[in-house]
Length: 374
Image 1: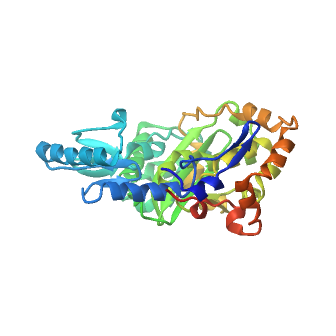
Image 2: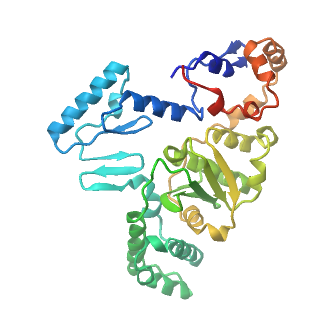
Image 3: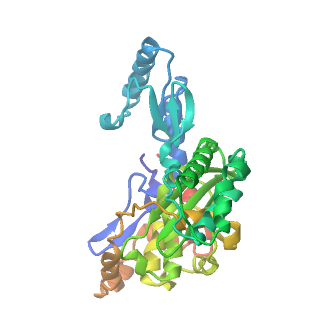
């Protein structure tokens, strides 16, 4: 979407090659999602389709109705100049994932991707891990009918001196975790009370998404070889960045509370990014696109995220290769910064910003107030 002239001026930035400004919405602007949603609703008004940002879903009772509705959608898109990526289009399907749900001919089901952290959670290998698992089950009791009966073999095992895991224990674990996955709540994209609870262990990360006090999704992953050498506060910050990518479609453009059991993160994230160590700076920059507020709660109050981080999935994050690149950028002090600062002072857009130094809206450069579509 094109920006109006004033909004375009507000995006001006300086480089050693001159000053540039965006003519269209740049990636990461908080207001872009709402503006885009409004434009799409105007384009497809009256077609009775599901429309969330750039995800469009149309349903029909039979093939004839399906084809008729598809023609209407394509005709409207052609008239309004909207283009679709053919590789991402699915036609005449009996089931399809849509915004965290699985739409099927049998009704709406939970998307397997948001439950795999629970469904594929490995079995405990020690008494300590078993206690963590039982603590998570007790916390999620409202999602597990007949929990006291189902977890009886596991409770008996926790009383023994050895952790001899048998088929009986494995069957009980699978039944309980299947029940959790089946009874998860659906995500309502209109909800605004969104919370992500995170935790980091020595070897993994865990996160749960809670909307209106109902659990919607789970996530966990293993730490890479390099990440295992991070300090604990770096691991805890990594646990904050992880769900921002994992649950992006749920939390983007929503005020989200991130709960952690690592209290120092609260104060660190309130300080300027420049005051943080380089690696924390990278992770803090990674969450700038999201409207998050980090709060502290004791570990005993977040047993699910704790269990997910300890009994994590074996997969790791492939996007862990940028530390050295950003370190080089931070050390590139060849004097061009002073020249850019001098030249920026004569730039009209820069003067606009400098005239408003005490306005908190402009100090934060909050795009919700600054940027408007043309």
